[in-house]
Length: 313
Ligand code: FAD
Ligand code: NAP
Image (cartoon, rainbow, N blue to C red):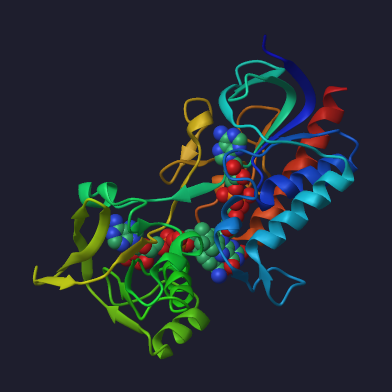
């Protein structure tokens, strides 16, 4: 028999936005309930050093998220290990069905489902996913000790992953489709002066190849974007770091989206077009996408929800 739980504020997601909303909503005595989802702690649990979280010159991403969770709990936020599978925003209280079978009813909802890694969509990338092809250097870098690795992408994630992978790999090749990186300058500087890293500009992944039994990567073929010339790289590991897509599946038919799936919020607030539904963090933000901006929006969402609920009373 399914259990139904009612809450004033349901927070969906446990990244910096979700936990910050949890802290603020709990301190507003709203007794929030936060559902963590498949990735408790969110994207920062897939990285190592975070150097731009104010107050910490350097902090490990997973440690920071454990601290945020503990903080939200200590303030009185009820944190549940569950996944929301569908959400009905057509009437209040809003209804969320979950993987555990529990039905959550909420007077206000704060969506903080963030974003997740994008893939190139090549059949051979799919074939070797988890067997030499990865989107998380922190999770899988250790498997490639003393081996050659390639990273695809030219943003902060790709450059950070390439730098991190030099801890394990004999050589890292960063492959980018242009000759200009879009990462922070400090990261670019570190990348270009790292003797273990080689850059391959104007190239795109054409194919991953390897053995079938056991399944494993033996190399990749990359194509020059201007000349179509194919280059073969004998790498054992390939890390795809080409960005992230917003996790807006739960609301894609109910809320207005922009820029390929980000939830629209009223400028300067976290209000969506549905009164009582708020959105914060990477789910709404295709520009900044930072832990600190997500946390800031989580705070705003809790304050917006508090105001909304007070007006209902
Ligand atoms: P996320 O962190 O994406 O969390 C989303 C949450 O939603 C997850 O907990 C997930 O389980 C949950 N969720 C999703 N779907 C459901 C569902 N159906 N039901 C319930 N829950 C659900 N930013 C920095 O400021 N500094 C850095 O150094 C930095 N390094 C990074 C390194 C990497 C490798 C990556 C990928 C990102 C990095 N970022 C960094 C960006 C930063 O991680 C994000 O901006 C931030 O985590 C976004 O927070 P968020 O709360 O919006 O969402
Ligand atoms: P991103 O900034 O969107 O960069 C994606 C990179 O992948 C770009 O260089 C892009 O190339 C390339 N790319 C995209 N699609 C491709 C395709 N189909 N084929 C080949 N290359 C492709 O994504 P991100 O690096 O994951 O960063 C996401 C957000 O998290 C950013 O806001 C970033 O600042 C933040 N973040 C911050 C930190 C930090 O502060 N230290 C660390 C990690 C992430 P083009 O350049 O040609 O478009």
